[in-house]
Length: 243
Image (cartoon, rainbow, N blue to C red; front, side, top):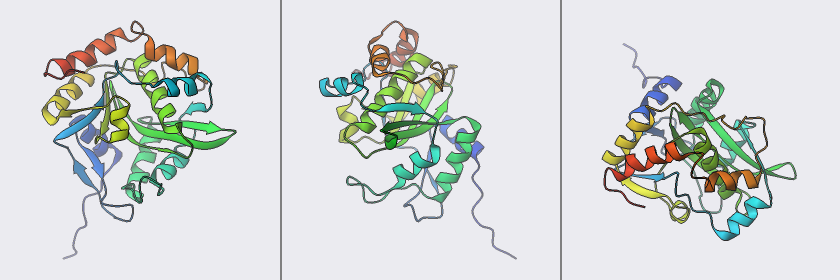
């Protein structure tokens, strides 16, 4: 009898996993297989309290970077997978690249790109599923480029009615921007609520260049996304989490 290899993971398996609180990872970029993760503590950004420093506000307002969405998935994930000063290796292997490329083609994965003088210098990618966005990875080649990408993402999610921004594991960098850790149980409650919401990642049209001023206005505006913020706040505060 021939030995069967591990079952093939499809994009639909990945979407199902996200819907129940799991996400895939590999031990390293060289690893051939994936495993599923459901951390005891989950890092999330409450969308109504994203922290933008004074210096970052000036960078965003001055439009130092041209910010686009969904224009170059392959370049973004390649940059996220590349060694950097703050990480010698990543978990983005060939299976991750293939699966998320397929999810991008299906309209579930989105990228945010930051360019300067035409050169890609920062960005991120993640999965959108109803009212939840699952941030996967980000990178920067110039100071503040990934922070600007994240600020644009939060603004877009607020405008589109999302209630959950999951960033998986806490880091000091994410904490400085307002991320908090919540328990697995609380995360699952917030996720369950987010999946009842029909959000729109393209509430700002995908071919429209969003200025820094628009981004900052969306981050400040408590009325444009008040329903989403209330839903997000309720999902977290009902479980005893304060910000």
